[in-house]
Length: 42
Image (cartoon, rainbow, N blue to C red):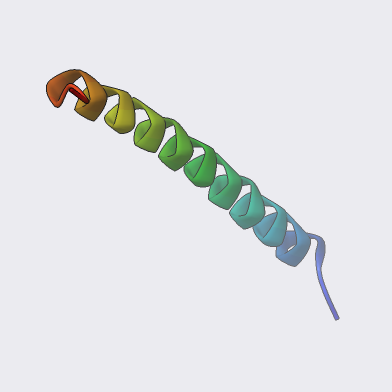
């Protein structure tokens, strides 16, 4: 039987996973921009 605490833990883990995924996406985009500036595509 699931308790309210179990549900809270599941919700929090899912939320944290989503935040980390979004941050990784932002980091990857910023790094790609940085590389474009560093290595001009001439």
